[in-house]
Length: 385
Image (cartoon, rainbow, N blue to C red; front, side, top):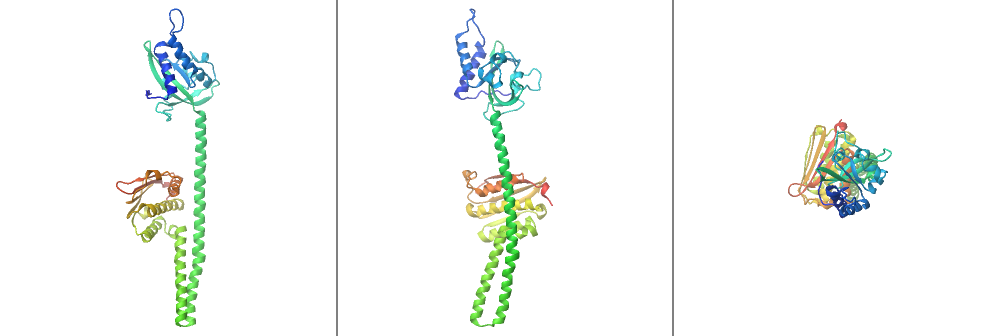
């Protein structure tokens, strides 16, 4: 295990200094009269009163020193610890004649601090619990003494697991709400198109018949012409609203044709050139994946239209090794780093949630030169049709 010699907080530094001083020159050293050497006694007092668990072990993994905090952590006394093998209190690695550093290699770097390594402690009754250890070594009488500061992190890990479960539940809730929302959109869009749309179309037909029945007087023609214009406007608005709720092309033609319609509408409404690079055969996916991808790209284009001040957008979708790779680039002003994690950026949050619901990855950042680039990787093997 790589031993760290980085700077430590004052309390830990003092304890490590004291124990290193003991292990290096004065550990258990007694003068000829049997009286404890004064500096060694002072260092022992520092270690004894330290709030963190501190132990020292020799090269054969035998504990030569332990403070009350360490004994309390394992549920034993100091006398029970000193002279005992390290394996009685820390789960031993599957190695013969393992030294103290190897006791922390199996579980790897703990990640909280650069010098922290994870291990497994064993309480007096044999109950395992999670620990972190910072280890340093010092030479003594031709051998090496290892000083270890230990922390019980079992409660912290329990809280982390609880938070992870809560996070997973929120993800599942978000996915369920997205599904419910999409189903409601589909239902409303169909109601608008099938019922209200047909009613407006029928009214236009009746209006045409009324024109023939009433004759061609100037006043009647002007009035009927205005009514027909209003009906046409209502039908156009109805189609636009229904399409925004749920594009019929998504159900009737598939993802590729829905994206073509989305691209054409984006160009027409915002005057921003937009290029779609995709193959229809690679976008034959089930409804769940097709809807999620459509909404992700729809949200990306909406953000570009509102914020990017772009003149050119490129959308590239292609499949490779069972994954769909999506890249959306624009040549706008870019997105500030601080905006990527803002709680108010609900559009970006929604995009990420849809990607994560499909167990994919998303990266949003600055492109080479001006603009923003969105890269998405989605596993689609189970979503192909």
